[in-house]
Length: 343
Image (cartoon, rainbow, N blue to C red):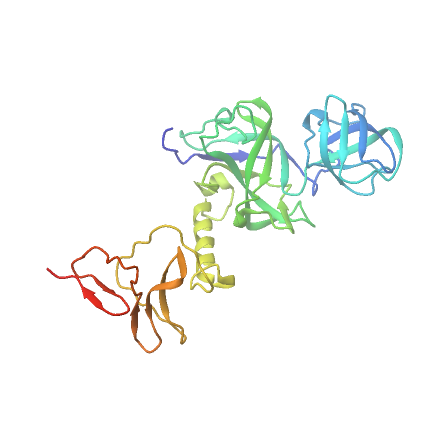
């Protein structure tokens, strides 16, 4: 595999639509189906082609999405599974009403997942990538897992006002699935918030702003976005974005916080497996009357070497009856004698 390059571009959303449970949730997926009160199964699920609009259908349903059907569910209910062959959706909660061929059954992505319809690729410069053909979702069949994932930096909004972006506040999301490759420069795709990198997890009170003109699209190294120019990110603030800087700052903060015994200065017990190399001087400060003790893991109840609180150094006595090999400068004790290794 070749060394990865810094690859990024702009994503023009002037003609795009962003769907989520916070925005446009009634206009994403529309289906029909049969509900039975007290049952989690929605059967005979088919596309609703007569809803008076353009919607996505059953081929876009994924576990984890949420379903709402007025009269049959009291709220958006999580989809646990979907079998397209049998046309059956299994919900996390039982239906509250019964209906045959219920219409206006709406399905939307869950919190932290977004569907971007008709995102237009907009590259400044002649570097890679040049169009959508270079970009794959991490769940796509043609995704090469030896290559970096792709993601976007999106402006955030409060969940209470998803159409009003917060100036200067951004989130990082991974492109998980390319749904439609409309052309080399126009694509519809899913975005998902990180579940592993704390600083890039979506806050409960925030969501991707449903009305924004530009997103940054970028390759991701070690789960982190690369750099970008202000024009690519659409910040209009005279500077670009560099998620590595964000991540490094957050990690340094965690290491120096000392909270919970997880950072430095370190408080608590630590178990280190492997060797440690130290360059420079080391000072060990024992802040109590306890001794400084070195032990062997195979005999933890016996010390190999100990410095008592009054400054007396104590070596383990060798009473095995078999003297150890002579080592120049070596020192060992029995209960009766002391031995020193010399030429």
